[in-house]
Length: 422
Ligand SMILES: [Zn+2]
Image (cartoon, rainbow, N blue to C red; front, side):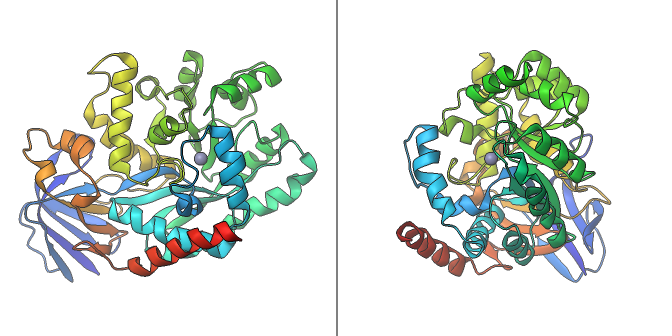
């Protein structure tokens, strides 16, 4: 199967960050040529005249089953929101419900140009793997676990964490995710890292100030230093949030080459106070990527919005309008995201996996003094017309081909009402 995209403005995200006006030839699941006027016969030809081709965006922190809790329990303090609203309703969710939420989430991701994700799930991961396979979307899924200090649960929890490996596919790989250092015993943290071997290891770290000081009190170390002392920091580690890091921890993140998944909108909405210093983390050599977090704390899965907010927060935080180059935000959402989840995508280059999004130039993208700034500050899901993942078209002319979007929305809306009455 071959696919030829003609006449696009290509934001390659290659090492030189070239912008090329031309064609992209895809054979199977890989990009095999990028050039002007490619003279090749292809099974499918997409005329992208007037459109922009970008690498598919990578969302490195999601809780997909929570998509049906969008807007549920607004304007509450974080702990009240969790304890009185989110945890009780989550406890009523079944694996089947998670599958319904997943179909809704994947429609939203595809429509907003996201082609890969990193998921930490609470419920049975099986239904998420199945939904992802149906959607044709790429990612990593971990069966999230926590023991709240009760080490007798560890054997059972490790078995639960292992189940993700049974369901993995070529497009969606298994990952390991203990919830956080303040909800998991040291023994569980160490054993999950041993279990992960070469799998991506996702964990929430330093989201709130309280948890940082609790860890400091318990271990005498700041969270990154503590996790490093037990062998948790390496290039396979995705540390989510990092809103309250010391300078020493930032340097350590760079030295160990971990990914820090920054979720600016969720942090702001939950008023966690601290903002990941991604400018310094990036300069130190850490792999900075971006995530939405769940639609319950965001309230969308829109990575365009996330790039914009991440940029604005750095400028605001440092009182410097040039705190971060705009290009960096696109890097975080594409190349660095790909590195975080461990796939050879994230740029439009010969030999790379063909995950490509086409954008139409609406009024919000005109004029085009700076195409990269338009992507970060002005673009949105309304510009996304076509989405290709692994060489296959999953959305064409704004119609999702792999999922029944109307049914997904109806089912999710029905479930959101019904679950409250259970
Ligand atoms: Zn999270």
